[in-house]
Length: 242
Ligand SMILES: [Zn+2]
Ligand SMILES: [Zn+2]
Image 1 (cartoon, rainbow, N blue to C red):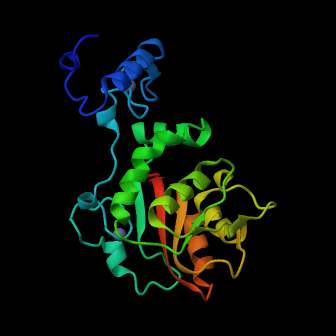
Image 2 (cartoon, helix red, strand yellow):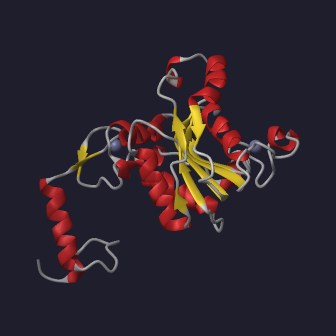
């Protein structure tokens, strides 16, 4: 290696030594792209440059600002949110980073089942950007079998403040949501969850990985709304099944 000028463009202020280390690391241990599964020395955040453009995360101008469902009228509430009377027992704002399909689904699954938690970093950044200046007193992860929801809660706490409280529990005897039809899920969700009363207060952020019918999150919001100390509940979720 001779002069700094020989390094490719875009290295910016990284020192030549750290660049050298990175390049050598990549050369001997090329990373695998989670989407196309090719080993590639240019993989960043678990995607190669060819697959990266296919990770579609929602931007605020294409979704409803309250429920995060696709609605391409920047800043306007979707018809469903406009029609809702009052917010009693309902979430205030729900942030969703992506539709659970294609490359987004691959990354969420890698985080959830492959324990590659970094794979969803771009989703977390997307959510944090949209959450913006909002701050929370309590961050409540939806209980799950894997470590992703707990990790998400810690990411949000670091940037948004508040205290993580695992106030929502799943009853052991209840059937798993995934084994039920849609109607049964809605009925089941109420019975599945229970809230440890008196531990949650103020502005609450409820955190989950993927929402399907929304039944679990709706039930959790209703439970939280019965707590006198809870002011409002927002939801942050990585992806929803479209
Ligand atoms: Zn790829
Ligand atoms: Zn809406």
